[in-house]
Length: 139
Image (cartoon, rainbow, N blue to C red; front, side, top):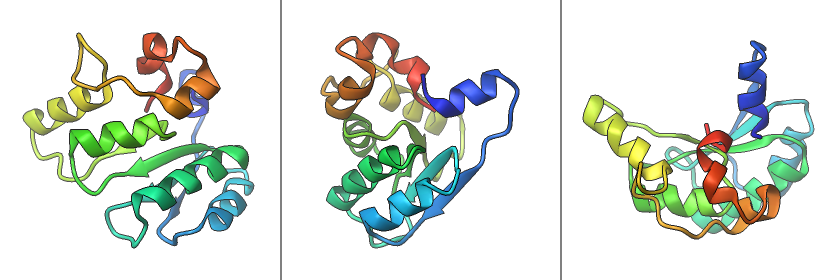
């Protein structure tokens, strides 16, 4: 289970760090500072997709949950990040129920959502049945 979800279920607080500087070394170092999660900010930083994937791997190696603030509420970007190791998504520009529903569909597999199947990194952590438990692993 996602560490952040586990802490929430136990009624405990969650402490997260925030990264806008590109670099796997920065990400791993921050993750080793006893944060529960580290957010990689793709909206307001020069971090691109390839760097974000490297940073998410380093964050997980450092012991924190890798979260991403996406640049937009874009289902294809969100799905690609989830397939490559993001275990939490923060989406900007959620202005109404329709925007929130769009985000919910982007992070969920059918029949609940529109997410396509391709979980590379999640399968390494959660096993081949990741898709069956994906809604319990994401924030």
